[in-house]
Length: 252
Image (cartoon, rainbow, N blue to C red; front, side, top):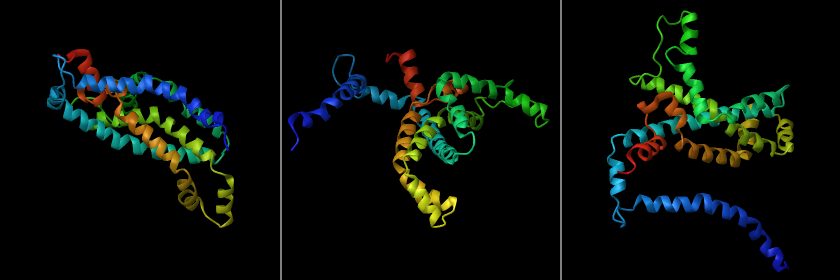
């Protein structure tokens, strides 16, 4: 039978985490919710939501955010999974490859956006390379306001380069938790690499894949700096509209 101290200890160990989450997440969320339904007179109202839904950029921001979510998250999961499996195969220099690809994690969102702006701008590295190779005669306006496909492609490439490493780290950690006995058993039964990946690795990696999917989905809704650096107001997203309303409209 456990003593009283043993019963209390798990809850005591959780208290710092609970306090941290309460102060920095729960309380601000409650305050934001109350502020969103508060009228100037001090009462409760839904007028703020009506104004938000009626804003000219709101529907475009929703569409663009969901489009980026649909394109970026699956692409990052697939790329990270392929690279994680490659690194986990323990080829020569796999550790160096991991460190190199983790470098974007140390770069801020805005800095990454500015870096890729230098690639896709009219006089950027991409146009210069294509012109020198004789592929194009005149610079292509990849980020022009009327070239939505070009803007979208640039953002997907930049965001995938910047944040795929986060998913990669999660999946590598999950792969290293899989006991080697499973791989040895698969080899013993003559399973090739594809069968071993489908029937052994992916089922055991499901918790890590779920965690990576949840985290990247949440972060996808927060995408702002890269979009703003590459497209400005030509491609509104939800996070950007929140900044715009706070900085310019001030709810007035």
